[in-house]
Amino acid sequence: MSRRLFRWAVAAPLALVLAAGLTGCGSGTADTSAPASSGGTAKTLTVFAAASLTGTFTELGKTFETAHPGTTVKFNFGSSATLAQQITQDAPADVFAAASPATMKTVTDASLAGQPTTFVRNRLEIAVPAGNPAKVKGLKDLADPKTKVALCAEQVPCGAAAVKALDAAGLTVTPVTLEQDVKATLTKVELGEVDAALVYKTDVIAAGDKVQGIPFPEAEKAINDYPIAVLTKAPAGGLAKEFVDLVLSPQGRDVLTKAGFDAP
Amino acid sequence: MSGRVPWALMVPALAGMAFLVLPLAGLLVRAPWSTLARRLAEPQVLEALRLSLLTATAATAVCLIFGVPLAWLLARVDFPGRRLVRALVTVPLVLPPVVGGVALLLVLGRRGLVGQWLDHAFGITLPFTTAGVVVAEAFVAMPFLVISVEGALRAADRRFEEAAATLGASRWTAFRRVTLPLIAPGVVAGGVLCWARALGEFGATITFAGNFPGRTQTMPLAVYLALETEPEAAIVLSLVLLAVSVIILACLRDKWVNSP
Image (cartoon, rainbow over all chains, first blue to last red; front, side):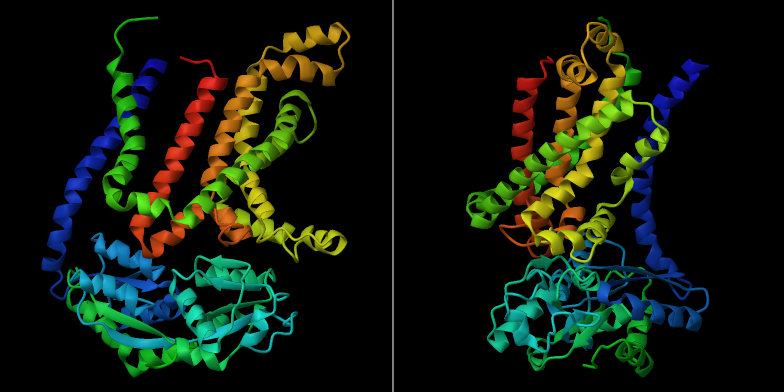
């Protein structure tokens, strides 16, 4: 009995390896056949969108599914740079909504997306923990060495915007940390580990009561454009354009501005 | 023992090896060799590497100081709830490191249960400091040490300790003079695992200690951020980290573990 068990233990991983090899070949054919079957009957639309669009796009996805019975909208939310990289590595996606023109450019440069349209803009706000313990009033308070500040790293869009805003104000801020994305930056504020951070207005609104937002005039100099585009290899074909149309429609704009985005 | 190597072992062994080695080969193939030297000379790279080696070593020291006695307690002392404690010790293994980082903030952060008191009484805040990096790495790496040392303790022949006791040695003396030398290979193996895990730690570190060059930006953090804009730089950084750790581990192995 134990011998048989041993054989199984050896055979199972082998079978797995073989199966992986087979499906590896199979998925290639599945990909190419998808557009052919998409003539009005495609069931799944895959949207790659910046993490800051999680709430609004999920809502718009539900609206889209109601308007197109039988269609499922699948989202892949993440850092725009990571998503762009996945698309250039041939990830099967229909629509790409990025948080910065630069990340969209890597996809259009590879001729993988059609003409992008700016659909919303996002501005920075100072986020402080509820009650504002360090009594931050404006951007210049962030330059005070006693104020613990978190910024996004310059490599990610919110960090690049923060640098632009601080430069415009002529301020030098020494943060205690340069976070990997806007959500991580916000977490530090929510937990009260820092006195202030520069994040998007939409993130401040999404965080609810735990965080207070302070608008500042220099944010005008660091507005972030969000482009959206249909991908050229879109397996869902025409549905992709219909989704983009929904995002650009007055109804889509309504959902987005309610979350704190500015209309372009 | 000699004889033909059974194919039933050989085939999965080779498949397993390929599975582990191929991603590394992928990095080597894609590495931007022509610009390698220039990228390596950037001061941030050396700074991140220095910080990584320093914090991983410090974290291993912390794990040895607390982890070996903990492993001994779990293996040699019968106390109520031992099974539960053993399960709890492995929690950092299954916890996503980012969650571990948040948990550390909730306890040791400026407003955390213990951190609040540390701040008020001593003016010590751990987040965003190099010490915070060590704390985060030790939290994630300690189970590796505890599990391997406990395994070594269970496998060790207890009769040596009993003999020491009958000869009048106290439990502490027996531990120091008999048990510890007996399980030394297990402790070293656990320490190496622990060091390697600490060196590659990302999630808990960036969540608890943040990311600031020279203070809390270790190699894995630098790699992650480089990936956002310059994937090639990320590959270079990963290769440096891999090369350094492989060299150090290979040297240590020869020195401490006399295996062929």
